[in-house]
Image (cartoon, rainbow, N blue to C red; front, side):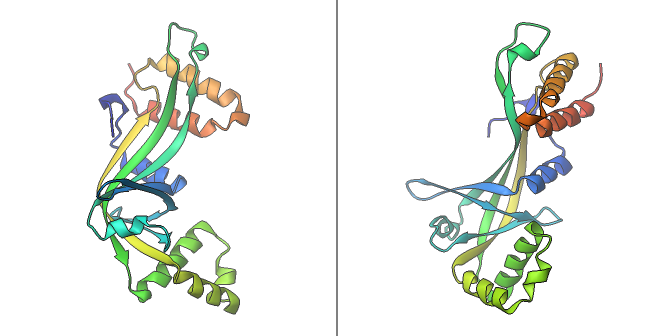
Length: 208
């Protein structure tokens, strides 16, 4: 991933938070003559050593995991267009601000049934706070047991984590403040998360 020095971040806590807030990963791996791409939600463990998730059995991407290829997991955070008209200084070019985390990993399949069911329960409980009231229902247990035969679970052992937070760090603080104010001024555009991230990044920068 192309990462100019001023857009790199070594803040692992912020990278972890971006993944937690945006768990739908774009998964990219290679076959002999092609790239395989798919999407799936994943969980990162507290030690940041691995990701867990699953694919449908019919999704061919999991077959590439048996070949020990390095796999990339991309997590897209807040993003949005930045207009030159938002600055009081000039001139400026239009651009797009965004935050992304790339995790490169070796992926192994989880084939032990004693591990598969707990993983499926962890995923569901994480994304559904009300899950517990259904977990013991007989019809639910039968349903998930049947569903488990149609998925392939995996564990991605993390090799490295790279972040790119392109948030106008190459601009003067006064310009960044103007951009943040403009993004916040129209909440209907849903850009408050981008403004928040830009503010966090600005607060991390030395003043002067």
